[in-house]
Image 1 (cartoon, rainbow over the protein chains, first blue to last red):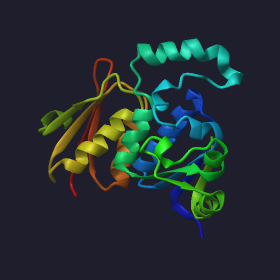
Image 2 (image 1 turned 90 degrees about the vertical axis):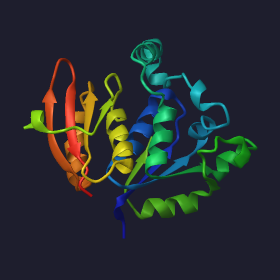
Image 3 (image 1 turned 90 degrees about the horizontal axis):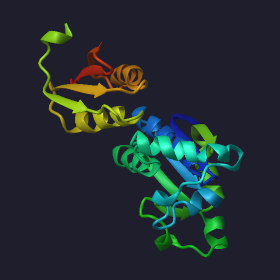
Length: 140
Length: 80
């Protein structure tokens, strides 16, 4: 049975134009009292290595011509960073953030290599079991 | 009317983008006392729609929204 009050998000990309929607959609989950499980894999996971989140400034290849304009408006309008938005959402709500075990193994990363916001390293089977129980699953 | 409501606390979230004002309100409501009236000042386009919806879902009381000069003043009462 899937639970309409649960959302699972796979974060594959580690570019700023993808990480923003991750943090904003997770906030939307918190507003709606949902449990949100976030699975960080590949480039999405690398963005959560210690010291990395605030450094992310790349935009997806498809939209790269927008990168300077995007960074300019973010700065000019003093938009909270995607990472602060995610930290705030996690503090206020029921958000769990997992590192993909396969990616961690591939790049020789262990829990200490990630920002403390990452709760655990888990395998895909465990995450998909969460997705199976979620009314909403997104891949970003 | 909104003008007569005594506001306990005002959150100035002008200049903050969606979901900032909404999340600030959630934070403040949690620590507020029952009966407190909170006004959120926001200049983003999402809050005036999000906040009333959230208020209904969270079973709090939505008092109203007034549009002022370039921003909205959204008022919510903590009732539970």
